[in-house]
Length: 640
Image (cartoon, rainbow, N blue to C red):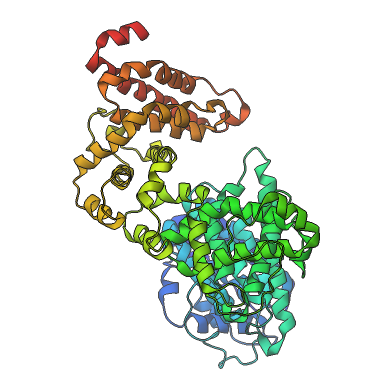
């Protein structure tokens, strides 16, 4: 089909939804079969940059849903492929809206995202415009409150409502199916596709949270609709997580829970600081988050189809506290990097809330005492339940003073497992803001960060060196793989080099403050930073070699093995030639392990990474031989 054979398919079919449904299926097939160049020749992307498209949308919906005989002028302004994008939001007939929502993602993302790239010019940069258009349609034609949408939408709900006063709103519950479609049909093969999944899930979360209170703007004061929309969003989230968990047990998982984990700071923020927070008390937000964790994130989660109205009374609070404590390093680290003190307040108060709930439940009292779950909380007395009556606090509705909450934030952030995760990320951050925020705002200059780093030196060093292998081989330049190990000019992860240099200065015995040390690093040239990094890595080379490369090698995936060997290759840059012979057995063992054929079917599924692993292993051995030979060539002959 060429671009001239699309024609204009009339949307009004004398009120016959069956014919409309057939024409929608026909249109999806036509778009799927049309060559990309033919679609691009219609300049579809210009439609979204023009003004008044909402007026055109509204006119088309009026023509489509009218029972009267009218001229179909709107169809001349809307290219038929765009109907696939807008039909889930403007259709009035339930079968049409459901079908359009169900096949929204296959039609948009099929054939390597052909239609998506055509509508928004570039698939890689199409995600934000796509979700802005979806949110615009939800707000304008389904009357979803814009505060419950992830895009910033200006203007009133419908720009054309006055021109078509008899046009009823489309069913928002059916329109939310587009997010389910995007999550279920988006393959997890690229960063952009994973981003679509994340934004779809966050969109559903924001709608569920915003409408759970039943107080946001609704049509005709119908609060039942508000709760119904929240229930629909919850049910879709349930279906997404259920399919995600099932895919984790399949041979080719699409979205394992490891994909959800990096989203946790954003997910928690949606509950802590929602756009409609003035309508939801902190207790309500915490109960919703508790319900979300219990329903979807715990190993024992059963994905209930409807949320419990008294969730905290029937779930295992101890298990939730354990999960939160396990995830706190990821969450706290992100809030510190973003310098978001308000989110830290809410996160700390949420931890206190969970402890209070555990204390309140008599059946959990003994478990709470055995697990010592209040080890971080100084604002809650053991054995006594504090009511959530309002008091003077940074978090309204929480009965803890501002002074104690600030103290709890500091204690939480310097907790052993959290500081071990946070410190490497503070050092890796390109700006000094988060480091100053941590020492001045959170710790109130009362914590000696240099002393903490000296205590956690090996753990922090291992985390930083692990990042050296974080680049995928397909992104490496040729000279990185084959270049001389002594040449640091082509080092890819210069951010890690700088972080290692920061660590050396921070753990030094000088009397300077962390901020002044950061300033001295900023003024340091590249080569001294490399020497500083080498002074930290070289003395701990054996520890890093064993713990990053050799330890539990056979339990690692091919991706983890690849990153381990890549780390070893980069670590060789810091190895003094006179010390190299004593590491010969360990490095030869690592290379032999890497060259061993995959032993399980699951390894064969990742054959691409195994090929890269073998290549990096060979080049690593080559680099090591050059280093040893530069010191004593006889060592090579005796050991190879």
